[in-house]
Amino acid sequence: SIAGINYRKGIAAYLGRSTGYIKPEPSNRHDPNAIAVYAEDGHHLGYIPATDTYEVHSLRLKFPIPVSVDIEECYDADDHRFYVGEVTIQVQTKKKPAK
Image (cartoon, rainbow, N blue to C red):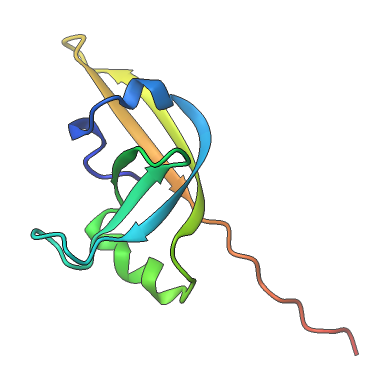
């Protein structure tokens, strides 16, 4: 998921599925392990949740990492709009040669 997406400006322009990238934000004063999520054009969409950053770092991929981004517009019971976003990292694995 994308944490903090509802605090970012201009999210409505990124509804649907698109491509983007993630990269660490070591200067983040709230979390030096933060990984930011960006649209392909560089617009900051939010963050990988803090509970998932270890898993992303453990992939040992070179940043920035390309990702698929999917953002939906939702409404609560009081008709207040909010956004939900998901990030997908596609990791290519090397196949062992057949013997």
